[in-house]
Length: 344
Ligand code: NAD
Image 1 (cartoon, rainbow, N blue to C red):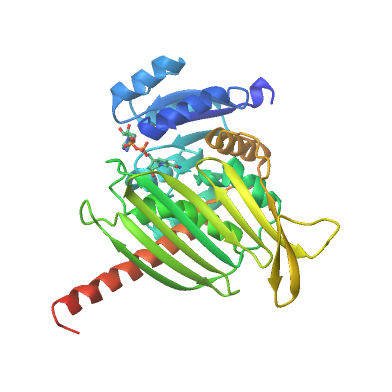
Image 2 (tube, rainbow, N blue to C red):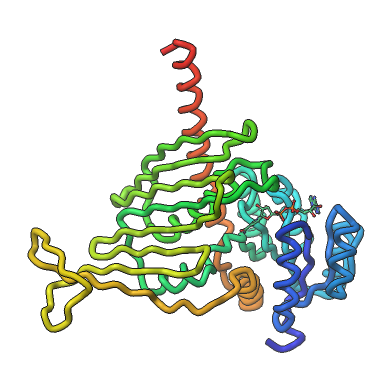
């Protein structure tokens, strides 16, 4: 991309993830020009600004002035706590900025809908930070065509006092809800969920079973108080099993094919339809930094006036599903409480 075609961008929020975004944005200097940094913690903004040679602005309004002086198109990257996304994204759209906003897009789907109508009316692009879509292991397998009938997702994280402002469903499970919705093109007809809060009122461990109209089932587990980290997606297809390790960025495929004595698999499985060959594959996954790739995709979609790789609508659909899960969980917990009191 030529120098003048670089996307002018302001970074809002330089906490844990915002500092990682800063490093990735610095790597994307060929496509993005960072015009300034704003964080309500001004010392944090100054530290990051000094590290990368970007101006630290005292207010969001000052950042928009800098961007507007540079001229459209310009954008902001919002990496602040989820509870602030709606207000900050709304202000960004009002200031004429394209928006990259971290996941979950907002706290409620009603807020996401409002952003959708504001962005649509202003003709501005919004991308939601569902970064797992850019995980090289997921991408490699997705391009090979996945048609799962059963999905098992495990996302377990060691305890970290950050992001306790929202339940584990909104903080962690939302990643897998987005992946499942990207894989299954069908309506969720039933949700059955349970969860428990260990550190406080907010749910720390959750399980949800989703039944889709096309017969696909997804079973998702998320925990933020585990002893070790795990991010795995297991996809069961009619004739294949695909295991994707999103943490190690590896994958394995076990395929069932017609019996072929001239090309035997690792073993033969006797089935009702006769002998079938079982073959194992470990697809080659080229390493990639998913955050760099999602920010690059955002800049390219703004430049080319195309829809974002992960749209506001995608972010809202994942959030709507999260809301159904949280509601089902709360109803189950309420029934449990009544029954414990001898009410049922
Ligand atoms: P954090 O608490 O470490 O940092 C948030 C920063 O935002 C802080 O520096 C804070 O001072 C600043 N801030 C708060 N309110 C602000 C406001 N109104 N205006 C300007 N700055 C403000 O949080 P984090 O862990 O970096 O998470 C930020 C967001 O990123 C959350 O929405 C979280 O869900 C998301 N996240 C996504 C992933 C992922 O895998 N995509 C991973 C971690 C976090």
